Length: 102
Image 1 (tube, rainbow, N blue to C red):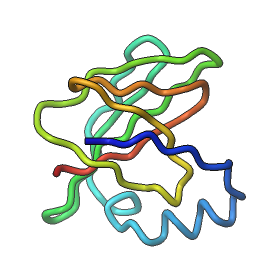
Image 2: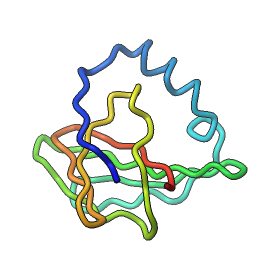
Image 3: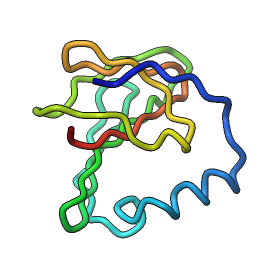
């Protein structure tokens, strides 16, 4: 389950440092980007590590159904903010989330 997390927007340097700790985000293969309304999402996979990323590209809140399976929150240090209920993630304006399989 994904808990609601609220973090202040980090600096670009902090974001770059956080990304450098997640090899799957740097070098993993990427699925095609799927756009549903104002939310873009994709998965990345490297070796046995998989993540699913979703980003709200709007000034309005949005929701997106998750891929099948159980997902947990990842990427906290990237400033991701989300809530989850019954397989749906809710993203605030301009927010994103990175999830990994549970």
